Image (cartoon, rainbow, N blue to C red):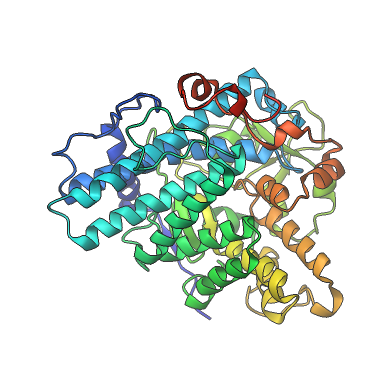
Length: 487
């Protein structure tokens, strides 16, 4: 068995986040709808390697800063999570009210700022007279990876959207593209990234060819191209680079997988990096924690919570360490109210300076993507059942790769039962990582599970978020008719 590696915080984590952010401070945040882009546009800027380092880092900043809120909103959409105060409306499943429509527009703008900065780099890199061809390819591959990741977020939540690329970068008015057209660009970008990104990142927080393959596997799963989803996930498995971090306690989950002092781990495929610096930290410890748990040194907003009376929690097997991340805290909503302590931080500098990174893809999720895709293609096999069992064993504090009495057995399962187990295992594993709602929509199970666990019938308009009025009013290639149903 390989040694599990967890790298603790030192000056290098601060350097990583500083490098990933420094370009943002040279970037103006002008409206995406202005005719002339204002983000690092001078011809003489895009020449040297340091210029393109700054331009690459400028892509990361809006995407990192929006991620905490994006995950929080998606978590309230689930069959297990609830929002409090102004966030309560998210889990009514009735669609968004005016306040939350404005918040949705802010997320939309952040996503498109990242896309815009990626487009500028993709346009300018081939024109540099000082970069080598290999350097040009590397910058373009990273920008396309981040652009595709962002469009994947956009299309799953908004559906058809304006497709802004380096080809139409100077156009203010861009028509709404179909979901098929958006996915076509996503696949094209990830395929470029897969081909040109390095096998080993120059520093944690940069994408690799394995991250691109993982994203391709998930996109193909979304599109129900199970053969290609299996192939891409299998390529990551066969590389033998990643492995699950072994744990023995709830604190191990907090520290060894999601810890504030962690630089990287053996199961990290791609994460957004944060540090204990004002304006450079994750917002999730503040959003989720409650002062009574003492898991966050600034108390916490406890803006999202769970219910011990929810069937999702009641049916969760005792002994699963992930269940222990939830703690009962009665803050006025009843004695079955729970808060989640997945992201603990004892030394944040302020509410914008928590050191916890935000995982985008981990090896645990890759194993479950493989298990689902392979089962859809081959039926139940020892390989895909083993992939599920590795995640399950680890959750109970066992050695992930050693056979255990807790294992699921092919002889006891049908294909339908196996796929149900994967869906549920992924819900446990990726709580507060922004995955469950998207999986329920993808599999067509959202109505079933939300009704079962929350007793709520989902309004049709809740499935897609509203396109911001600013986009509809000022993008003359779009009209009110382009708005998503129900808004």
